[in-house]
Length: 213
Image (cartoon, rainbow, N blue to C red; front, top):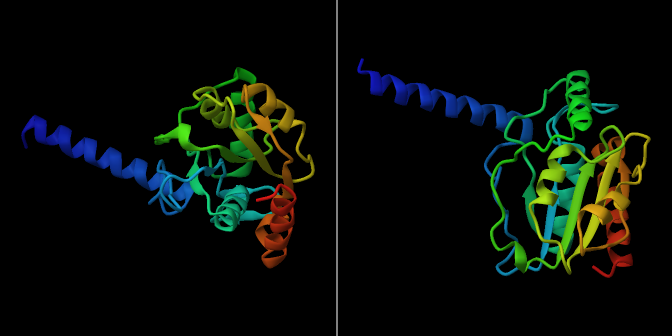
């Protein structure tokens, strides 16, 4: 086999392997790194970070806690949807993931994520979802935040946790999303997100109505 053919085959295998890893961690992989559009020229966007696999108190799940809420919010308000999916997926096992995330927090790491959002300037309202990791947002969220101009936008946090509540993160968003107005957050345990069903729809609806969305 010619050397250049070997290189092409090796590169193809690597790309397929990365695709499979990413798909396992972030769902079917079809929309990873892409904006899922509800309609053209939308003014509302749901951005979220979420992790499937083993999660505290809910076991091994196919859909991450925060993703469940993100999809419900996007459906209720008719927003576009974008997932912050890190280029290097987090470990599937809970203990391994928490150790990894703790080290990222210590280093104030800014992990790269897949894809990008075109026409960022068109969005006026950004629903921003994340789980609480070690009392903070997961570090890829900061990567996303620090790349953007937030001036004049409304940012609406929605947060999953397992006992820590919002951990003061809306204040951190206020500091990080410079020039944005931070509106009232929605907070729910991951256990409730996984098991709440129609009850969660009603709670989200009440929250959104209170924000006039």
